[in-house]
Length: 311
Figure (cartoon, rainbow, N blue to C red):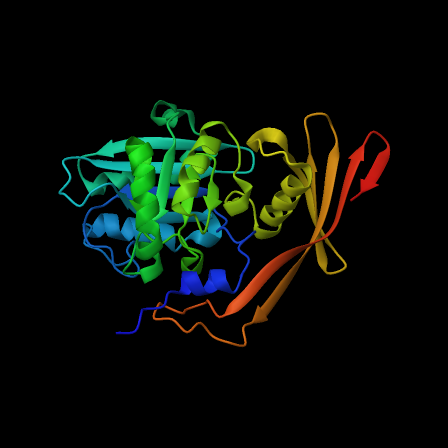
């Protein structure tokens, strides 16, 4: 019997880049749900009708809310209570809120706009605990289960309380995919030997750059620019750089970051998009995968005092 081929393995062999391709979102609604997860789990499920409509309306309001809805679980047993987490991933603020409900209909009581704005009424639900979600939704794409499950098992071994399976979070061809909350750091092509390193980096407020796809609070060009700044400087502390400005010039994007000493780091990146000559010869879902998108570093300058240094 021929061995089944997987898009994540083919993508890695083709060295398709993933830097800058994390989904941009400002609020994440992560609902504990142990029922079946289909291809589009958050839109096709057995939630009570009011809760299903509430979730669907939220997911479909991306243009206004910039939000993502996902299911999470740590097991497949029936639930006595339902946990729900709301991650806020804004450029200026990240936070994680933890709720516990008896019925899914209680989701309708959440003021998502208020949570996003940091309404004081929700301060008592803020948690200082981390949350790690790994896509293992094999019904969406086989790669999510094939490559995500080993990462889930290893991370759950190291930190069981904070590790969760999750439904689709984008980029099946880059599996295994892991997001660390509340910071919103998205890692792709994670291998089992890297899990402990990523966990240690997150606990100490650092990035693990080799597998960092981007921070979800930034749009794509800023994700890519931050990657190049950190690659050039070797500075991986999450709070080391603050975003100052983004503008487009001569077909490329110019992004400026500032460090605590006042130095300005100017990065110019250019997006390249092309259809692939050879489509993925795999048995996975191929929707949106037969192209290559890459953000290339064009120029990097450091401005300290009155000097500009081009590297």
